[in-house]
Image (cartoon, rainbow, N blue to C red):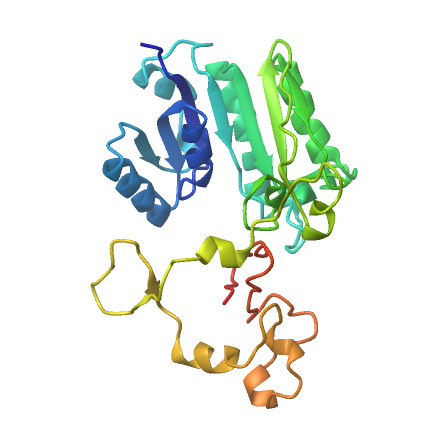
Length: 304
C-alpha cells in the first residue's frame, strides 16, 4: 500500500485550501488556526469525514515548531508539504495597505519560520496580488515580496511563481465559478522542477476560437439544482446548511436590482432605499449574474 504524502496546514481558515490538498492525495496531519468559528468548522468536517487531522486553535506565533514536529512524530525533512495563506489585509488593495507596519503583515514570515524547522519538501504560499507591490520598512515597492523570496532561498528553497493575466493566477481559469486572482509561490528544497498547470477555462469571448478552452463556469451552473433555502429557525440547521438568513430590510433594498448590477446604480430608487451608497459601492448590495462567474467576496460584504 502506497503511503500518503503528508502536509501541514497553516492559517487554515475554514479549510478551503485543505480541500485541494486532500484532492491532490495528501494526508493533512494538523491545521493551525486562531479563529474559533473556523476551528469549529474544521473539527466538524474532520469528524464527518472520519479523518485524524489535529486542529490547533491558537495564534501561530505561540506555536513552537520543534515541539509540534515531535508531537506529530516527524523528523526534519519528512514532511512533504507545508502550505498556507497568511492574512491578506496588510497587503490587500482595498485595505489600508500598512504592510509590515501591521502586525498581521509579519505573519507572512511564519511560513519561513516553520519551513526552517520542518524542512518540508515543498512550501506553498498563497497571497493577494497586493503582495507584489507592498512596500518594506524602507518604503521600497515590492520589498516585502522580495524579502520573502530571499528568506526562503536563504533556507535552501528555490521559489517559482507564475504570472497569469498580467501577474496572477485567476481561479476562473481553472473551472472555479469565481473571478479570484491570487499569487501562488511554490518553493522546493534544493531545486525547483514544479510546473504550474495550464489554464483549462477562459472567458466565453475567447472560448469560441480555434483550439479553445472551456468557457468559464458561471454562477447559474454552480447553483443549478440547489433548490430553495430553508427559512431561518432558531436552533435548526438543515443537513446541507442551505438556510436563508437575509434580514427583511436587506430583502427590501435588493428587490428590483437587476442581475449583474448593484443598488447604488439604481438612481431611480428612492434615496432612503439607496442609503449612503455612492457610485464607488459597486460590490455592496450586488446581485450576481447567473451568466458570469461570481466576484471575489470581500470582508464586510455579501452578494445576492
